[in-house]
Structure formats: structure tokens, C-alpha cells
Image (tube, rainbow, N blue to C red; front, side):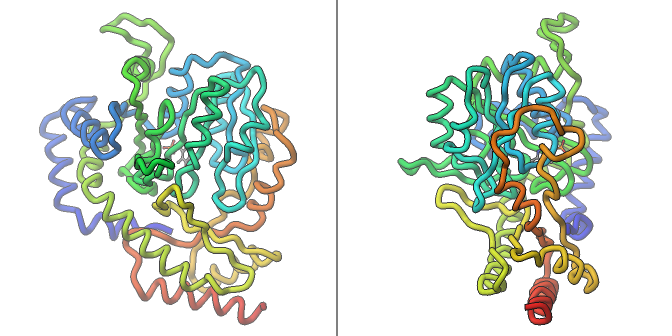
Length: 373
Ligand SMILES: *Cc1c(COP(=O)(O)O)cnc(C)c1O
């Protein structure tokens, strides 16, 4: 699904040199590499503040803590997402309210959200799934109308550009109150271990998030809140400083793979290629097909037998996961999320794919439908 080795080989000397600098400095916590990354990411995102932290899940947790949410407060989350989004809400004693998603973008919409709002609702967590930003402008209006916070789960979509009606363009994750990013190795900007960050344009919130991520410390050994310990490792920052310079190139490589797949599969019966929104560019963390009429599992097996990996993101809605059954609140029967769990299939997409690999994957998919039309 990914080729981290091939990618490393191309930038090996720069990565090794940057790690070596970090080792020589013995500045392993915070320090210059982390500072440099923070500043670099602020510039890249056009965000006033970046607060690095331990991983994407911590980013979501610290963000929710920083919003001052209290036990019992309702937080609206998509049912079709990676578990982390819902998990941290549950962990903090908040009440995750799981809503359905749009069948084309796999993301929540303002219409869906509005049906879920009640007096307990305090926040919305749009997840920019698979590389495309949620349609945020209508969401901002709803948030304003009901006085809700927005925490963007931008773990999969760093670099996506969102366009407002007036033509203004911003990076995904910088639109709500706070955006959360993951640098898990297979993410679009991947470290060589865990890493994460939050970003915000709010000065007070930035201070608050920084304190919470550092044991609730306001000044040395003065603890104003109960916080957590969540830091970006300096060696990971050394790696990310190099890789951030390549992020746009990596995104373009992913988009070229997606363009190839689109052409190869647009006319295949039973397949729906990813729908690209007008308002957002797509950075293709995943290339996810909808395989209809019950062909999904058989196609996956056929691909596997012919040496092509594929993955199901996600096989269950979070509400159907054992840990979450009977927890939180489900809004309706989540028909679209459930149908997606039965029909989505993600193909290999990464920065090092060759024409031969793409041709072989496309031929194999076509061969399945020739045999099983
Ligand atoms: C990867 C991911 C996370 C969690 O990030 P980690 O760095 O693995 O903790 C959260 N939300 C979504 C949507 C993700 O894809």
C-alpha cells in the first residue's frame, strides 16, 4: 500500500544528515529541530500557531481538552472514520454523537450536522477523510448559529486547499478553531515513528494547548490545569523538516496516481471512482473506490491472489465497533456509513509508484470484471 523504503532512499543523505545534527546537539526534547519544524509548518499551512505533539490522537485529545469541554457535552463526529476521533471524546467523558456521512465525499455536511444538534452539543469534529477537506463554509455558519467549536481532524489531508465562495483559499485544518494532524509514517507527511501537531489562529487557545500538552504547566513547576505529556520527538522533527520540503511534490505524485486510476476505472461497471469536490483539492491519502453489487470482497480476494494489495477503510462504523456499542449517541441508522463499510476498497497509492505497477493493478481489476461481469 505504501513504499517508505523507496521514498527514504531518494532523500537518505538529507535525512541522515538532519538526524545526525540532532544527535550531535543532544537536544532531544523540544530544542532547535522542533522549533524549526513548528515554524516551517506554520508557514506551510498559513496558520498563526502550530503546537507539535506526540501523535494525531493526542492532538485530538489535547484539542478537546483545550476547548474546555465538560463531561456529558456532546461532540458530533462522523460514524465513518478512524476510531481515534471518537475514542478521545469517549475517553474524556464527552458524549460522542455519531452521524452519517455524504455518500460522495465520505465527509459530514452541514445538513447532517444540523439534525444532530441539541442543547448539549458543544463541538463538531469534521474528519477530512482520505485527502479531501470537508465542505467547511456551511459548517462554519452552523457553528456560529449554535455557538459550537470546530475541531478539524486533518490527519489524512495535510496540504489540501479549501476554497471559500468568495475565492479565498486556505489549507485544510486551518479553518475551524483548531486542526489536528498526524505524522504517522504512512500519512501524507510521515515521520519515522509517531508524531502529531495542532494548529490554530487563536493566540489564547494556542497558549492553552501548549500548556495542556506540557502537564498543564503555566510556568516551570507551576501546574494550572491537569494536562498530559505529549511532545514531538526531536529526531522525528529532524526527519519532518526534510520531508516537509517535499510535501507538495509528494502530493503531486499521489494526484498523478489518482488521475491514472480515474481514467482506468471511470467506465467500469460496478465501480465508482472518488468524487472530487469543487471546494477542495484532493491530496489522496487514500484512493478509495466504491465497488457495488456485492463485488467488493471477491475483487479484494482476486487482487490479493494476483499480488495486488488493497485495504478496506473502514470495515465497520465506529458505532458498530465492540468498544462503542451502546456508547454515545447514534443519529439515525447511518445508512450511508454502513453501505460504505460494505463497498469501499482502497488501492495502493504512494509517492513511488511506477507505470508498470499502475498498469498491472489496472489490468488486474479489469481482468476481475471480465471474468465476473
Ligand atoms: C491516523 C489518524 C488519526 C490518529 O493519528 P495517530 O498519529 O495515529 O495517533 C486520527 N484520525 C484519523 C482520521 C487518522 O487517519
